[in-house]
Amino acid sequence: MTSSNSEHFHSARSFNRKTVFFVILFLIVAIAGLSYVKWWPYYEKALKSATSHSIGSSILGSDTAAAPSLGAAADYALAYFKSVWKAAVLGILLGSLVQVLLPAQWLYKVLGSSRFKSTFLGGVASLPGMMCTCCAAPIAAGLRKRNVSVGASLAFWIGNPVLNPATLIFMTFVLSWKFTLLRLVFGILMTFGISYLANRFARGKEVPAPAAIEAAESKDETPFALRWLKSLGLMILNVVPAYLLSVLVLGAFQNTLFPVELGGGFLAILVFAIVGTLFVIPTAAEIPIIQSFTALGLGAGPAAALLLTLPAVSLPSMLMVAHSFPRKALMFVFASVVVIGIAAGIVGGLVL
Image (tube, rainbow, N blue to C red):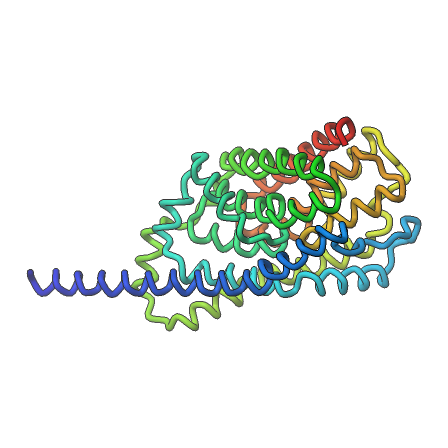
C-alpha cells in the first residue's frame, strides 16, 4: 500500500468513525428531547383522557363577536407559546443538528428520491415526533438542506401533526372513534398523497449534491461547535421572526376567523377548511376546539374540516419553511389541504 493510499484509508476510517459518532449523538439528543417534551407527557395525558374524556379547554376565545385587538393577540400568543415553547426549542435544535450531524449521502440515499418510497419513509419517520406543524417545520427545513427530497421532507412535516399517534388516542377517548377513523383515512391521504405529488415542483430549488456537501465538510476545518452555532443562528434568523409575527396576527383575529354561527352546510365547511389551514394551534388543540365549537352549534361537517386542516399546516409554519421549499410546492400544499379538508367535511357531515 502506497503512502497516499494509506493516508486515504486512514482518513476514510477516521471520517467513518466521526460519522457514526455524530449519528449516535443526534439520536441521543432526539430521543432524550422527545422523551422529555412529548412521549412521557403524552403518556400521562392519554391516561387522563381515558378517564376524564377531556384534554383541557379550548385555546381559542369563546366570544366570536369580539373585534380584533392587540389584547387578543397578546393573550393568544401567550397561551400558545406557553404550550409549545419546549417543543419549539427542540424543533429548532434538531433542525440545526440535522444539518451538521447526519451524513448527506445517507439521507440522500434513503430520502432523496422523488419516488414514493422516499415519501413513504419520510412520513413514517414523522410518527415518533408527534410535533405540531410549526415545531416540525425547522426539522423539515433542515432536511431539505441535506438533500432530502421535497416529497420526503413534506411527508415528515405534515405527518408529524396529522398522523400523531398520541393525538389519535386522545381523539378516540374525547371525541369518538369515528373522528379518529376520519382523521386517519384523510390524514394518510394528506401526508403521503400531497407530499408525493409535490415532488413535481422541486425544479429550481435543488440543493447541492450530497457528495459536494460532504466533500466541503471534510475540508472544512471549522470546529464542530462553531459549525453548529452557525447553523443554529441561521435557523433562528430564518424562522423565529416570521413565526412570532404571524402568531400575533392570527391571535388578534382569533375571535372573528371562526364564524360558528354558520352552523353547517357547504359554505361553513369551505370557510372552516380555509381558516383551519391558515390558523396555528399547539399539538392536539383541535380536539377541545372542536368540542367547544360543536357545543356552540357548529355542524359536524365544518368540525370534520377543522379536524384535518387545523393541525396540518398553518400560515406561520409555511412562512418558516418558505426558504426551503419551492413556492409553487407550498401553494400546492395549501390548496390541497383545503381541498382535503372540504372532502373530509362533506364525509364528516354524513357519518359523524
